[in-house]
Image (cartoon, rainbow, N blue to C red; front, side, top):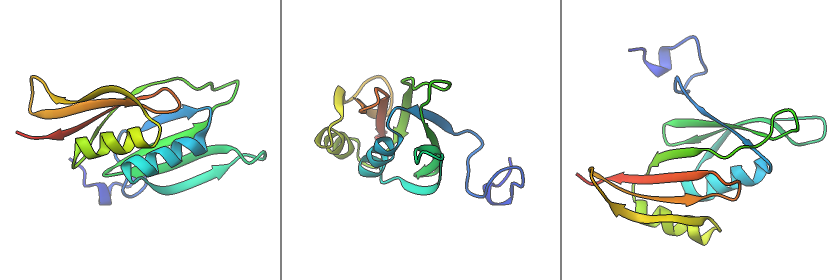
Length: 132
């Protein structure tokens, strides 16, 4: 397996797979990820009209790429799964920041305590903490 730092075929610190979000309000999505998941901005490129053409944020060890939706590339909701240190605290923080509750955190058939929220763009974020 390649070491992330030594891989020459991708930017340093990037995973081999990253999710790419098309959002009707890319700036709001960045704010949401920053507020809820402590995301940090890696880069942002603007179009001539000032909208986000391409941005990258880091959440933990992953990179989320996103763009302001256009008629040619419309927004569409997706599901994401994120491990966090404290699923209950993250769930409460998300709800306090306007996320819609989908499922309160609970433990089901595996070792994860998991819950879900819907962000302002309609994406479902499954958040989990491994307990076992």
